[in-house]
Length: 120
Image 1: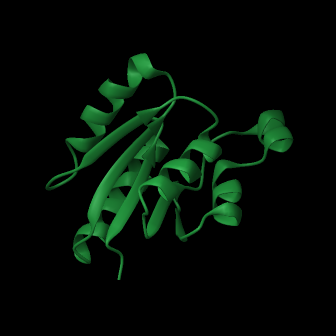
Image 2: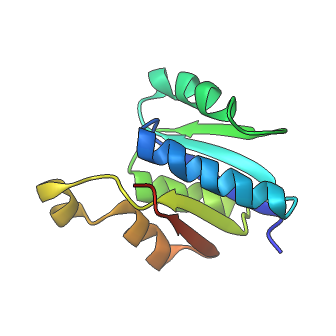
Image 3: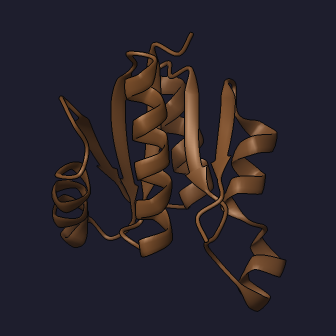
């Protein structure tokens, strides 16, 4: 069904919950897992290493800097993933109103299926 699944994280507790849900789904169907961090490069490696420690099996880790939704979509297309997993929580308040939520932007623009995990 899903050969390659992209899990996304910014290192937050809600993103970690989404990764747990997504990795369980990916493992249950035998998918390859890619773990993506979008954010500060200096912390990206640390976030990816600590997050991947909770995932069983091999995980390909990718860290990029830029707009979260744009980079998630870019990596998903470049890596030809079948499913993107994002958490339902992230930005709040005025920033979310002005920029839109990452899950909303990803779900409306992805070339593949998107799973929005309820993280709270």
